[in-house]
Length: 497
Image (cartoon, rainbow, N blue to C red; front, side, top):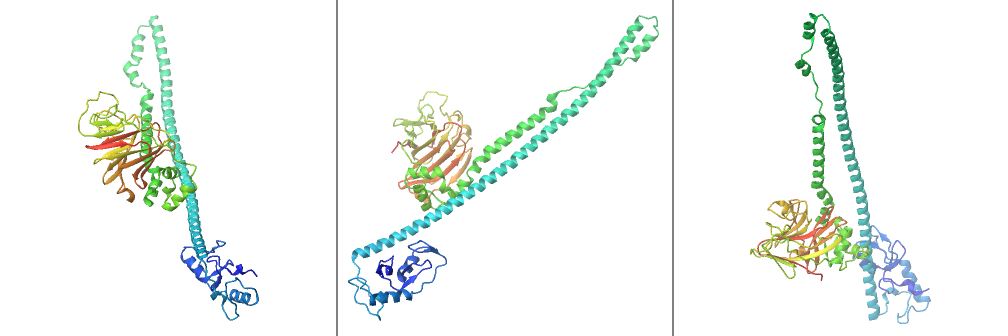
């Protein structure tokens, strides 16, 4: 009989108090107990079979007797394992292990623990992916049902309005046709009277003429029964009501659509503060949005490294920016090749230009961004605002139509030493600062996936990047990076590292 059959696969030595697990494999009682105490799930180190609840371990006396017989009637197990005797427990006569054997045993134990941890993490990730897919399908089904109900409601209202218009048309046409028939009878009667008067004018019966003239109807009495038909009077209010309803529905959609789109993202943001080691992981995780469903950081890291390798960060995604001097407010100063802007309170004699902000201390970049892009900016001072806007944002005056983030054409992140806030459509929302970003340098990263409708703001720290806020929307044209500066503030757009 091969002595290796009595060797523990954990410590690589002869069994000490051997125990057998339900799957049939045997180990030293102390080795298996220590192995199970260090992991959350009890499983066989060889075949990975898991046991729940944890089985009670009892000494396998049959194995002990077989080991004793092997040492008595068979050849020695190893040359240096000492003598064998029927009254001795062979598990107590263990050879002294070399340093290499001990190191090998420790390494194998560490590998076994590492494999168990990775398998547990893999299982949890699969469960999370399955749950995410199931929830996504349910959300699609529910949203389709809700939109179908909405379409049915609109269709019913359309049919009702159509029937209302047709009923009004029918009533008005019937009234007009009755009046036409009455007018035709009156015209025929009047023509008859006219012919009778013509006949009397040529006859000698002059005494009948006054009587016939008195019988002719008065023109004022005839006009009192007239009917005026005007389609604008009848259907103008209907057109106006339908147009106002359309405008209200569109306004409601534009107002509520961002909150609906970001509802799932906000739930993920509240569960985990995403911290990544580099911008490559940032783009990978944002592209697939796995961290938005509440994965813990270890699972998100494993997902990005194992599943999302096809999305890699390249220098083409980083967009170096330059400021447009024709848009800069006269209180702003551009330096270092139009990469740095500062506000000192001093007015500059810039020429008049239709694109220049004349009231708000703002400036746009030259580059209109589409596709995938990422850029960073460092800021100093008490308050600055960084963001993206359409080129059609207002430039003249102090209204919100010209103010970055306070209209439907722009999105902004307000930065101060103690807080962040995002703003769109004149609606501001405070942003919680992740713990790693509280002691970070003042650098902000902005990621835009124009085609996917994704905009993300990040706090860039020495150890990585921290997600501050995610925006999901539909972008219809190029977006231009922009900045607003408070007094004694500076913004520097960073070149590619």
